[in-house]
Length: 313
Ligand code: UDP
Image 1: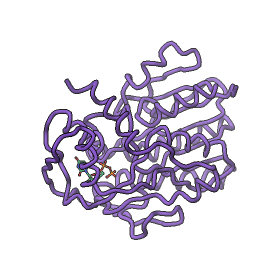
Image 2: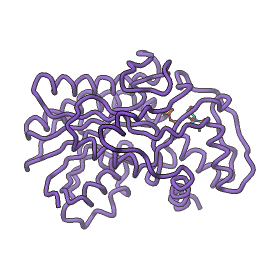
Image 3: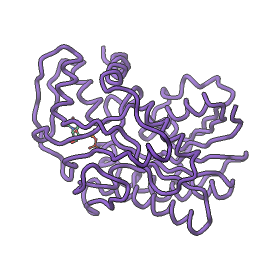
């Protein structure tokens, strides 16, 4: 048993709530913070009576303190879907900047290990494919996605600065597209969007011609990688994602196959700066952590569809 304590910012969010489940299962105590801007209390409802779990309602972009000793700080708080961060760009910038400083300061004060959730968005619309950690990216600093992309790039810079200036034990995970239960049906991302549309008998809204690619990682695989990284000695960024790449049209076809319904698409304009391709190079995570995704796409999608059925009558 591991009797350590972890603080997880953004704990009521999709990915962090799964990370919390994994940490608790490994014997840690967990203190989760969230202000419910994009997270939801139902993602943590099953932990209500767990003596190893504490929830604090807190906007982490405002300074906060924790009374007890802390061994790990996971800074996961941030809007993460394109429609969310375009609607609340200032909150998104603060989650990457002020909130990152607050979480870093907590780790420094406690002598804790710090891990920040970064993103494949730091690569922008990539000119190198697949994307290795050594690629510096192609981000439009004033585009609609910049509130997220640049905030996460800043969060990485702040993390490296604390590591270099204070010797803080820091980790940076670059998370690629992830899916699974506890995503919000209305968060606008392609996985809940297409599944929700299929459940409601609506056409699937493909942006552009659907030839852009993404590589989808099931959430249990992702959080296993994050936890391994947190326990490693490595300080530079590490990609975590599933290299199984497909076009958005192929993803729509897969959803229609699972639902056994004809493929009906509604083509909408491609949003500005929408990356044309995305696929993680995960050689580093494999070598360093012995980690790679194990959940097959069809199995993960089946679980995700089963979850979303509870929300559409
Ligand atoms: N997308 C789409 N229809 C939707 C939502 C998204 O075609 O209803 C496309 C979007 O343009 C992008 C891809 O699906 O190319 C993945 O979008 P998502 O918002 O899930 O995440 P992103 O990888 O862009 O952050």
